[in-house]
Length: 168
Ligand code: HEC
Image 1 (cartoon, rainbow, N blue to C red):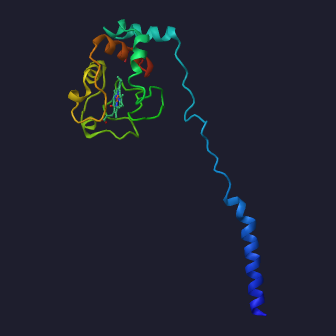
Image 2: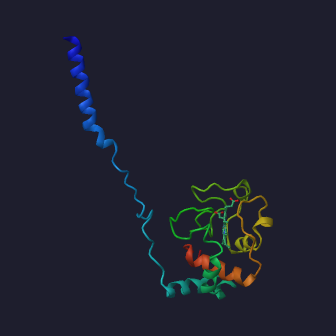
């Protein structure tokens, strides 16, 4: 009698488990196509040219289209948009006026963390000319941009694209 009761109890549990089964195997919903952040409002070409005109020389003479082309050398590792993701390198939005090695959520090398300066056009110019000698021990695998005009155009482009506000 007692065994029969236990057996029916087990049968009931088994039925319950079977009924619960499908809930545990729901397909995980992958939000693959949902963008991490809403797209920031884009600057018009006229607004970009207006910002360019406020930059100190020689950057006010920079060519934004050329700068954009040169940024192709960087974009496998860096994004420029506000709230954009870190890749191999940190997101660069707001880099001008920011202390080196300070972008949240990025694991910098000790060399960059210890740099102790704030990025401005001059520092960026030296970094981009030869990252290896400018901050020995850093992890940016980039050979350097020897052409001063390309650096000028790239820095002007970066200023305009990374949220630089005239007068800052
Ligand atoms: C192969 C990947 C790669 C390429 C290409 C690359 N970078 Fe980087 N960049 C990095 C990494 C990694 C770091 C962080 C270095 C460290 O912590 O030592 C970095 C750091 C930086 C920083 C310092 C950011 C901060 O928050 O202090 C700037 C500015 C920068 N890169 C600009 C550029 C520009 C402009 C280009 C194109 C000319 C470029 N990088 C090309 C990987 C790259």
